[in-house]
Length: 257
Image (cartoon, rainbow, N blue to C red; front, side, top):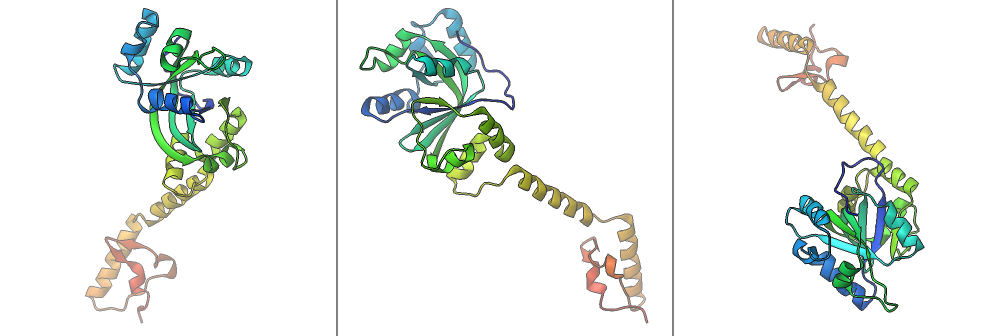
């Protein structure tokens, strides 16, 4: 069965996928993730309806595809995958790609075409196609604590990050791709509550500084006083104000006799 991408909600699941670790896995990573694959390659393996769905998703573009060998845990996780869920692709100690599930299909023949078989004759038939992929280069040590893992944790195979941890992550930091890009640049993450507080403070500051009709009237009186060569005094609570580029505090040193 293949699905088409759905609108993204706040409860997206996050899957952590290891692509690499030995010579054959590294070759598969290069073949079907870094180099990507084409719709023409899959036509002879999939029914026409599934091909049509993939065409609607990719519009002729090349795509990332990956898979897992059947087993109780892998099948359970694969069944939970839905379009829009996030996939983080781990390779040699770093998160190399981030994307979203576009569709999935269980197909031995297509998996054998892409990746042959493992030592026991199985293949990575629990397949999933990825869309909106972005290259990243983030050491896993930087991401682990954000999801509640120890810094030295190393993912294995095909796993799903605890959904409560994903919710806490979203509440604290927001979009995962934005977080990855921030970590990649070596910048410090800011918790959403702190960021929102800073934004509110800037808004409040801007509101306080917007001149009012009262400010305009005060400035006109100041100017009249200057033109009349009178001493001018600005009350203490009005000294931080301004109008038309003129700071009222500049007139706090003189006052009417």
